[in-house]
Amino acid sequence: MCYPGDTDFHFWLTRSVGRSIGLNFRQALDDGRLSADGYLSLVQACQVCEHVTSCQHWLGGQKGLPRQKRAPEFCRIGEKLDALKPH
Image 1 (cartoon, helix red, strand yellow):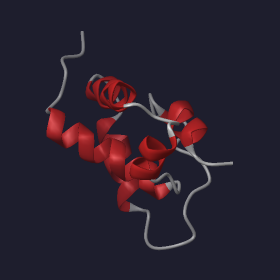
Image 2 (cartoon, helix red, strand yellow):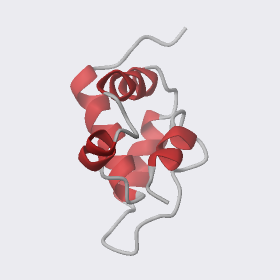
Image 3 (cartoon, helix red, strand yellow):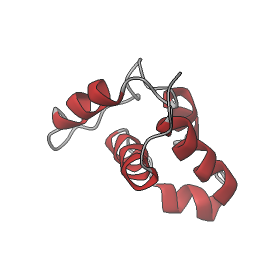
Image 4 (cartoon, helix red, strand yellow):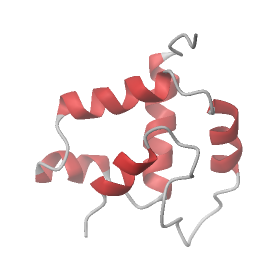
């Protein structure tokens, strides 16, 4: 069983992975591509992910541009983050 992690920590992980792939959460919210409840659901899914250490290592390797085109394969919410990017 995986227990939820700290909400603030996983908010920042979610935000950081999103930013590294070029996702602007504020713009996604403003454009209606993401709701506040949807954002909360992303963070909550991140909270129970078993790949936190891998995520931190992946984020640590993201130095400057170019940004990654996709979230890492192991990311529990990666497909959802990828789908939120503007086309």
